[in-house]
Length: 264
Image (cartoon, one colour):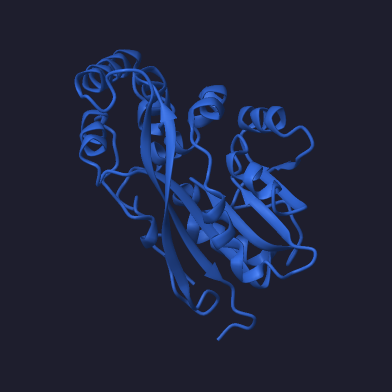
């Protein structure tokens, strides 16, 4: 069971600050961030879809973007999230959802109590040296661990241009979700794929979305204003986004690992 953090060269205090920054804009996060395509969630669950009852943990559930999709297909879903503001938005979105306060490093569930752990937009923030053994602990043998990420499709030229103008002095270098998990005795096979996705945006809502990213949330007010002005000018200057609504092309990356029934 090996992991590869894309941020091993980042100051741990900076990493912790960015990882915990989302709650300050929980309402905006709930409003502006995209959901997940059903096909991506179903692919993540595919190895355990035949289990009855199927028990799924949405870990670092945030405002419930992934919980919402899971609830369409799975009756027994528990959402675990450390930030009370994010949990508050999840409760507003899904009043009947089963939720718990907790982290990936200290999951408040018994051993072997879930068949799948899905993590939306958060696996890269975990302290994987601590979180992986904890996830293995609560995951039943043969269960699934899957990370999902919505990524702006920067193979589209104007989206790549947007990515460039929205960089800040604290932006991380580019990394690939597929590098997060590595094969080992408990997860002998790691699979990954991507799904096309999109989100309907305007100039204003696109800027608002970018303002929910951790590298922007942790900027000073002056730095944030400079960045949002730059992004607004760019979006108003190109034909794809200048007038009214437009579709933001997204690719949803999914990394899936099945826990070995017995360690090798």
